[in-house]
Length: 338
Ligand SMILES: [Zn+2]
Ligand SMILES: [Zn+2]
Image (tube, rainbow, N blue to C red; front, side, top):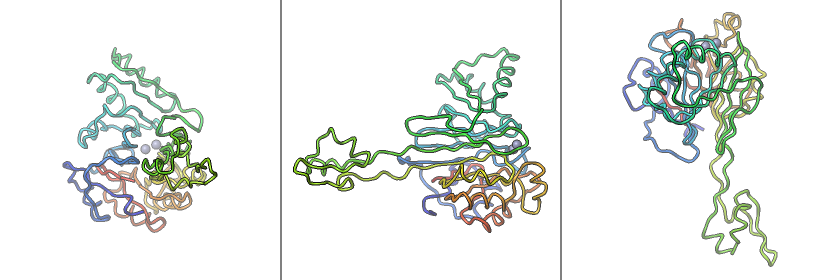
């Protein structure tokens, strides 16, 4: 899978210490931005827990699925990080907030009001725990502010599908944290097979049958000859999936919910020596995140939400890869492409 998962250093001035750690652990391949039909790119904007520390910011990330962009959590400083890494918020139509600890949403009201100040016109869809609506309404009311665009709020109440669009779906699942907390599963929809226009003509297959060909059906001619589907169509590249597990205690029951995803983001707030502290605070260690990735059979694991007691991140990677080899550190300003 290595060639399918390329770390791309963001093209602008991200030359800080954290990038250096990344460069030490994994060879960085520079890629020109080139959209492909099944593109899934995750850009990390914040990888720290609780407070900003050592140049690291609270949690926020942007997921691109083809031409759709999703903001996942919005810690303090997210707007600045978006500007720094050239993520245009006009492209974001969906925002997902996992829980109401400040390091996951204190940047939200600033972003929402900036969108309005910049005359956003398109609707924005916001998903999060139910009290988030009251918090936003209160903040807007006391400021006598009315957003110039339509904000749709969807409270997360039960596990299951929360978005079903033409090209993708999003499901939420509950995770065990100190307060109500949700993970998100993003999946591209299966694409129809591509028809080879020359071959369908040569077999004289009527256009009315094309839709069935795209679904994988074989064609039988009037004389009874069977034309196998793969003779006249080609499969599209497999659809991609991404799971974001938010803040959680070690909980193996989530494995079945994220089984086999192409990319999993799992928190590693602590190194393995702090497993007692991790459990007491409803967080995870490196070894625990690796165990979840292994048992869920994921293709690739990305770890983040690092405690501000650690300045260096090298040990996070070495400890996790002992359990699950295909692991990378979530580094701010880095795009992970699947
Ligand atoms: Zn957190
Ligand atoms: Zn939390």
